[in-house]
Image (cartoon, rainbow, N blue to C red):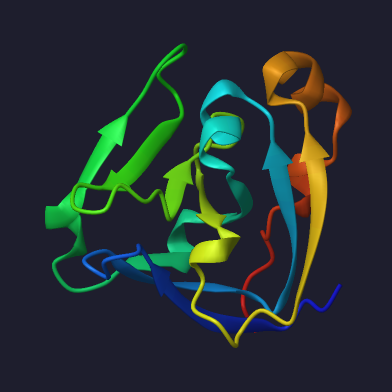
Length: 139
């Protein structure tokens, strides 16, 4: 995987929520089958919180849904309902980016891996999810 860090822009469908994220142009994205992700069809990659920036007045258009352990923060646009990013349960010090919400043109490759979110505890212990999060400092 290419680890050169670039800036990606993205956001929700109605464009009320806009953000920028620093990540490689080639990422590993996780297709989770937990109750929330499977209903939304979410596939995401994660970056450290400091690599994510909300733009403009985006925060005014966000709301958050939590359930279960209340650790994951499912953040979505109040206008169009799209979850373009969220705070994952397994690594709450990262931001999970919905890869389909990245503006076209900056991601050159997305490798998709399954994640058994229905059996979250076991999956978290058995997968390399954390190692695929982008944690290296940008150069």
